[in-house]
Image (cartoon, rainbow, N blue to C red):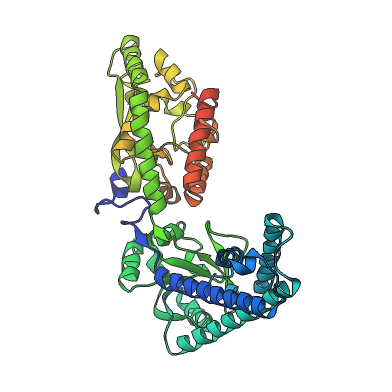
Amino acid sequence: MISKFIPLVSFKPDLRSSRGTRIQRGFATRFLRVLTLILLDAIALTLAWKLAVFYGTPLKSPWTEKSSFLLLILVVEISIIAAQGLYNAGTHRRNYTHLIKAVSLSELFLLLIAFLYEPERYVSRSIFLLFWLLSVVFICTTRLIFDIATKRLRRVGVIRYPVFLIADTEDQVSNIKLIEKENCYNIVGVTEASSLDRDNREKTLEFLHKRGIVEVFVSWNAIKNRLYISWHFLSAGITLRILPTEKEVLPPKSILWIIGEVPCLTIPAPIIAGSSFLLKRYFDLFCAIILIFSLSPILLLIALLIKLDSPGPVFFRQSRIGLHCKQFKIWKFRTMVTNAEKLQTALEAKNEMKDGVLFKLKNDPRITRIGKFLRLYSLDELPQLFNVLVGEMSLVGPRPLPIRDVERFQTTHFIRQEVLPGITGLWQVSGRSDIDSFEDGVKLDIAYIENWSLWLDLNIVLKTVKVVLQKSGAY
């Protein structure tokens, strides 16, 4: 029975959303670090420029006479240093070779600006060379001082990130030693991999929030068989680090990070957790309202044609399984005879889906004349815009399936129920009804969830219009 899959707890949000927008954990500390580095670089560059102008060969030029040009120099230099990732945490900011390259590149870029701005009046060669040399020396020196000061403060327990370790018992000792090598973390707790199981996940995240955890380290063995753990940490605003890594399998949205000279995977938390999904919801509401009003004449015409074509109601409402296996009524224009669901039992033997999870029949005798046309252009799905309005569906997401289909799910299939169902999805634009294996369709749904972004949603919406107009795989 499907009831065993329907949670009895209060409504849980979409996997990609946050329980209210949350600022990234540890953001204030990171922001202060970056701001300090920028200020130190600005002071170093200003001092280097003043000394170069003072000791260099004087040459009448707006670059040495106007303070606005010093501001331009600072903006260019700091922007190029930032573009090289030299304000990032860890070993990035201590990469002095890249720092020298960035300063040298910015000097050349300033020369180009000066030549295009006023080719006959820049600064003397001695000022330019002195500025380049002093910039390199002062910036590298301030970075070195900053790093030495930071290390000393961390030795006495200051500027450390509170972190938590989740690992199997046999991996915990080695993982703790590895984390301690970085000398910037306080390990405030350790627990076993079972804390990431579906039944324990919510309690674990709530515990991490109450303890003020900024980052969570998870051993590879503890996470490799638990799909979408990354989304739970993203929506909680907690940075997830996976160690050590297997390069053959990379979770989505992950980046490589070196800790204790060992590569591990990091899934960084967004600055504002859940903000992208909030924008998705606003986008859904805006589009649904606009489409309902603009298509109202077409909706009325379709309703009239259905009434004239066959006896029965205009709309077809069916129980579908949506977010977290919660039942809801989906709205569609009726495309079949009124007793279609009763007739399906007799047609099960003709099901064209290979695994039998879904029911698909190309020449379904239950479809009415106007219903065939509506299905050809997916016009029967338009009333689902009202499901979008009330928050039961999204414009884009895995299609909500009937109870009969979900009752045949295997355990791994339920992952697709972790996000809001959609009117269209990656499955629909990748073959529509031509995909005759449910497993192939689920793989597309999983690919959508793992790689979700607002741009992907927009891309699927545009592809849907193309697929519908071409009548690809429709029946």
